[in-house]
Amino acid sequence: MEVVKAVVFKHDADVKPLLEAFNQMVNECMEYALRYGVNSPMKLEKALYDEFKQKYGLATHYCISACRVACSALKSWRRLVKKGRADKNKPPVFKTLAMRLQKGLMRFKEDKIVVTVKPRQWVEIPLIIGSYQAQFVEAWRKGELKLGEITLLEDKAIATFKKEVQEVAPKGYASIDVNLMSLDVLKTNGESLAYKKTDLKKLYGIRVHYFKKRRKIQRLSKYKPKTSKRLMEKYSKREKRRIDDILHKITANIVRELVKEGISPVFEKLKGLNYNATRNHHAKRKNRKVSSLPYWKIQRFIEYKMAWHGYKTHYVNAKNTSKTCPRCGSLSQAKGQVYECKHCGYEADRHFIACVNILNMWGTGFSPKALNELIEREELGGNESNRLLHIPT
Ligand SMILES: [Zn+2]
Image 1 (spheres, helix red, strand yellow):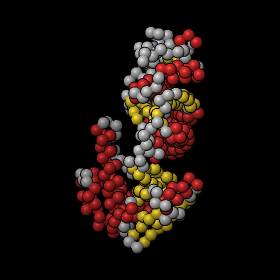
Image 2 (image 1 turned 30 degrees about the horizontal axis):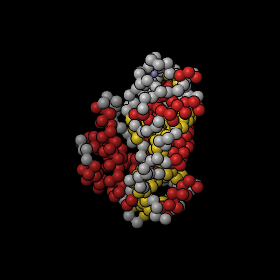
Image 3 (image 1 turned 180 degrees about the vertical axis):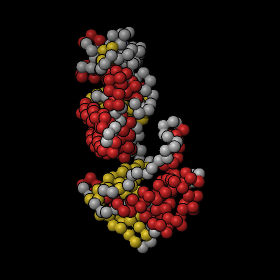
Image 4 (image 1 turned 180 degrees about the horizontal axis):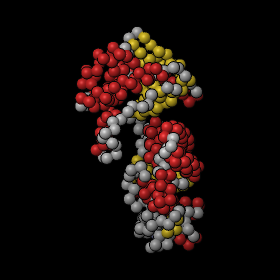
């Protein structure tokens, strides 16, 4: 299978005029498309090509690219309007100063990108290359990686590298349960089981911090709308960066371990973004926006990081994974962090229960004996007498 990785290179070349010109082109494309009801990039290109050539004088690629970006932005806007999530009287505006550079428009030269601006006119963008970026450049030079598109921004370039990997047959599976305060992993290699909880309180703390900040800024919006908007954007970006940073570190650690042991991850299928918030009604009521932590990101980060090493990520239906008793199979609702079975009295951490059930649903074989050993070793049962599970084999 082909796997793709996006690598960020910082740069300090002045590409702002170029990006601004492109931005303007996209917005003009959208206006034209809306006014004359044009939906296809090809038709749009035909209609605007001469005008753009004269006005901007940029290479043909820019025109093609602007038309494509405009059409796809309009398409997703129309979809949102249909769902009632966007105002049909407020067409989208292309705000980002960013541009995709297709193969025909640039050459990647290890330490710089050479971008065609006009026929026979180029701009050089020297890249800042750290040790992380260097390993990809090196692999690309050796021919181990192929270069895909590059997205150019004001201060960075995001390059996609591709490679063909052989799918690895896993030696075992790990169920991963992601929730508000922790990330729980239950690994099995078919024989023994291992369980690990990663604390996500820090992540949650950051969300709460920025949630409070946003609320303060919102109050400002009445008499200082511009300042409020600017601050909102600034803090949203900062929050995203901090959260993503932590998520990358956490997921990289998990992936390193799984790859070392030859284990594939299994997740619950997410139902919409607020999946865990809806599962935990208490958290939903108490925290509202704060509770919508980007769980899907953890799944996506792990999935593409595993894919890079040739491992597939699997998903099971989320139904009752946190309610089913692993000992007797009956359903009970967890209270807070503790799961207690109404039927047999088995008590344990609710996220541990979810992990056991996800692995069971995936159908990977681990013996009741292995589970009992784990529960004893890690003291994962509520009390001595009912800690051991008796799963009929
Ligand atoms: Zn039970």
